[in-house]
Figure 1 (spheres, rainbow, N blue to C red):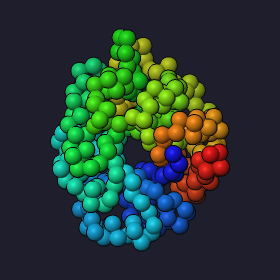
Figure 2 (figure 1 turned 30 degrees about the vertical axis):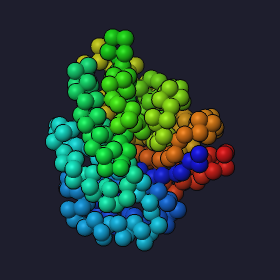
Figure 3 (figure 1 turned 120 degrees about the horizontal axis):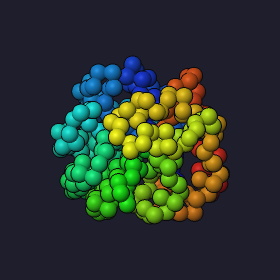
Figure 4 (figure 1 turned 45 degrees about the vertical axis):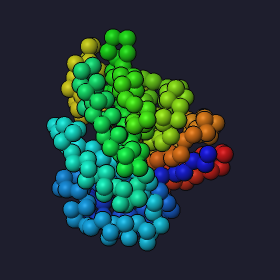
Length: 290
């Protein structure tokens, strides 16, 4: 299977907040063909479809030659997963031609809330499937917290229905969770056919975030990201500690990865220059290695 390169638009969320269509134009000019949408303006909390009509967004994407293959659809901090209007979310994404909806982050911390989250993911995944869409869960690092003999991620994996819930592995967050992303990809098999690619600064030490946390790790989950993750931890692709040669040889070898998606969370310099540089790195390893 040919791997397609995508861009998660969280990479340019500030730019989208200020100029939605102008930012999409620049993304297309840089050379991206596939985009993973973010559907909320993070400065206002409003869905972009409350500002622009669906037909107008769809027409603009088409004019620019951008395929919206997927969309990240989360809930505001403090909101329950099932509080979102999933019928509207599914309908809007289906109308835009998205093949997949990804739930970007559940603030789980223990066994009970993880099992409840798995139950909710199953319900949403079933709704998506009935509408002809795939549904994914996107990991960060906190899901790899250990609970006795297992982890929160394993609980999610074991208690979600593979027919309804897939995984979009963020390879660097898996590393930060203390695991080998390539081994986890192999274990998940074709339950994970989309990956997020970022790069981690060589100065990040320890890479495993749990080594830095207080003994017992009773921290509020959000504090892991506000107190132990720094904006400078993330760098442009190919300038950090990720071994791209090894990673993409493995991805090609696995044969079931459909999309390798750039997510640039770096805070230094011009974001358009960063994602342009990232695209060149991805083309080298996704296209030239195959």
